[in-house]
Image (cartoon, rainbow, N blue to C red):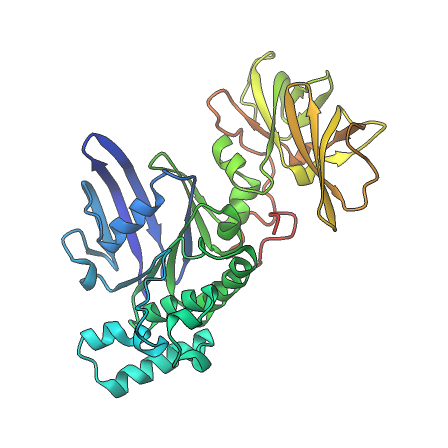
Length: 382
C-alpha cells in the first residue's frame, strides 16, 4: 500500500482560511480517521489529498513523492463518497467495473477483478441486479467494490455511512473494519461521528477550525485528551465539566475544591499552581457513581433514559446539568435528590486556556491500536 505525509498544508477560499498549517503522517496499512464537528475542515482536507482541491501552500506526499501538481486520476487513490453515485441503468457488475472499462481493461480481466471484490464484499449473488433493487447497505458496498477493483494505494472514505440508518451503520462499521484487515490496506476515513472513529480507527485525527487538536490511538484520546475540546468531543455521552479551585499542589497531584465544598486530590502535575487558581474538572458519565451516603456531589434528577442494560441520569447541580451512566435497574426516579462521586484517578483537570494538566499515571490501554484490542465497553456508548 502507501504512506502519506502532509507538510504545513494550507487552504484558503478567498479570505477564508480553511486548513491552517496541517502536519500529519499516515503510515502504511493504517486506518486513520479524521473526526470533528461540521465545518472543521475534515472533508476539505480529504479532497486536497484526493486532488479535488488544490493546496494554497504546503506539500502532499504519497510514498515520498510530491503530489501537489499530480491530477486526481494519477495519484493512485480511490475515493468513496457519502452519496453512492451508482449508474442506475447499469448492473452491479457493470458499476464496479466501469472505471476499468474506461481504462481499456479487457472484459475477462474486468470480470475477474469484479468477482474478486464481490467475494470480499459478499456481493456475488447481486452482480446482475441494478441499484434500485439494492438496499442502502448493499449500494454502499457496491461503491466500495468500485474502489477495490482499482487496487489503489490509499482508500479515501468521505462520510460513507451518513445516509444509512442506525442498524446499517453498525453493520457497515463492522464490515469496513473487517475489510481493512482483509485487504491490509491504508485507509483514511472522514466522519463527524466520534463513535465511528473510536470503533474503527488505528489512529484518530481530531480537527477543529482547520487545525489538528490531537492525533493518537482511540484509547489515548479517551484517557489522555490534550485539551478540553478533545475531552468533550471523544466519548459518548460527552464528558461533564465542573468549575473547581486549586487548594494545593504536591507530588501526589492537585487538590481542588469541588462545587459544594468537597476537596479531592487529582493525580495530575500542578507545576506549582497557586491556591485559588480556577480550573475545570472533567469526568466522564460512565465514571460517575451514585453514592447516597458519601458522594461529594449532589443534585436533582431532571430526566431518566432507560436503555435496558444501563440508564442515563441527567442531574441538575446548580446551573450545571450532569450526565451519569448507571445500572439499568437503578431505582431512582425523576425529581429524586441523589448524591454521587468518582475516583480521582478518573478525573481530568484543564487550565484557563483549556489545556489538560498532564496525568501522573499512564492508563494501561491508552497506547493500544485497534487491531491490538477493540475499545472496551466503557469507552464509548455503542
